[in-house]
Amino acid sequence: MTGQSELRINRRARGDAARPLRHALSAFMKAKEVEPDSVDDIVTAVGEALANAIEHAYSDGDNGKVELFARLDAGGTVVIEVSDQGAFIERGQRQGRGYGLQIVRRIARWVSIDTSSGTTVSMIFDAPDAESFRDVKAPNLER
Amino acid sequence: MNPAPTIGVIALSGELDIGRRAEMQEALRLPAAHGAMLIDLSAVVYADSSILAELLRFRAEADRRQVRLALLITSRQLSRLVEYAGLSEAFAIFDARGAALSYLGETPA
Figure (cartoon, rainbow over the protein chains, first blue to last red):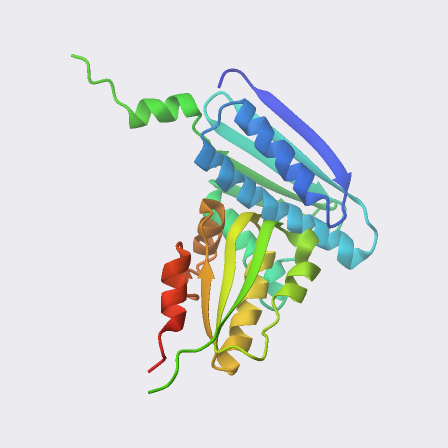
């Protein structure tokens, strides 16, 4: 992974919006050779943030937009923001729905929720690229 | 000796996210005829926590009716989702169909 790369994409916040946004994020990270298990975990966390954003739209009935921003930094860090125009709803407030934010917090190194204008969930992840992962897993045995 | 319970199977596949919540609710209905149920999630390639809420609802109904329940999960992503949610102990989870069916086929004590 060299330099810095960004992805910005938005969709109408309908139930079918999360899938293409997840796929775009996954393809973006794979293209930058982020290690596959890290891609899975990051997509899992971001999928929860997207589900929450889409749920806002359902509850508000406004069908606004949800935006995904991702930035890969050279040091093996992925910064992601999921933004919508609705009020944040912690899914724990609903029967059996309290796991989204818990899952995000288990995976991300840092999480922040800004509700000053709509809702933006910001997350930072450690994401070793495949090359450095191979370096860790396969030490040089030559003397 | 009690006979082994009849085992029902519900299979879900693909990407289980918030957009398929209604479909999950419809699929995860406990049928009347079975003493044990296998939820086969081996063809699931991605899931968000929407499925966890539905599985917990299904488990509560199964517990009420004393129906034995097992989950078949082979995807790393779904397995990790369950783990991150702290629900690994909430279900009998198997990564091989034969093991899940053996568990369900055992006559409860």
